[in-house]
Image 1: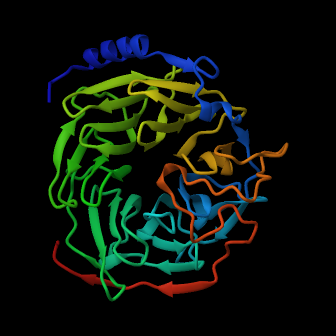
Image 2 (image 1 turned 45 degrees about the vertical axis):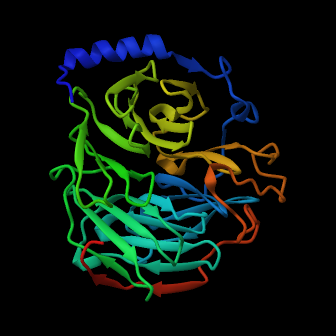
Length: 381
């Protein structure tokens, strides 16, 4: 990587803002953006929500006190209260299996949980090998209950890899430290064994062997904090950062794009092919237009947004105070409160299939079965 000074990043960021452009709502709106506006949804919690993801049953989000919430046809509801251990540990990250059937979520004191949206089964996998550090984020590849490969990162800069075996148990190997010990707030995988992490020490690394080895790819000139990473491949990576910057990696170099004129932090980013969604401070949401251009959406809230997810039925952004912003997509329609009125909407955008679950059904998704998961020590594949 080239060695850039702090002055270089300021100069490059300013040039990026000029060439890429910070678009406001309506200046170059896509068809997806034109379908509906961002609205504030009624939230089932007043506590912070820290991350979000789309599933076969609609959007899910996780947050403080172990809350897991989901979008139903009539609105948002709590699915899990108090977390998988019933100890109210803060949940910080969530990801979804292939096909959208199950979500995995992580949080404080080693909390790891899995929720199957089809069977409504909650499984507790917390503190594997006695590890009770706070997990900051997670990434999942594979089919629920069959062949998941799981990646968990924590505040000590550690990565734990788990793999589902035929017995149903999860095997794990010794942890590694991709970033040398700094907190890793974001991890994302674009394939079963290929993905990226970002750390709080301006460090981004990639792996192609399932997390066994990592190569640093930047960002040498960055002067601000990193909050999240979106991995689409070895030549298509975004990092959400402070000072209103989204960094873009093309396989050779990093380019900083100032997407917020107010220079407020971008705290969450989600990519799906050429499409992308980001969110951050001041209640702002950002839509990807091209490799270096994002549309900024002003909303009616000023909350710090910590999670964002593109979906088959709703795009969502979540944050402080239980804030939930949502935007209808696909063929769904909404009433005056932003609630879906089309119960037959079964779009499969974002690669999430919903053949096993009626998306946005009004049926509650409360836990029907609780299990204790098994971890066994293994060697790496």
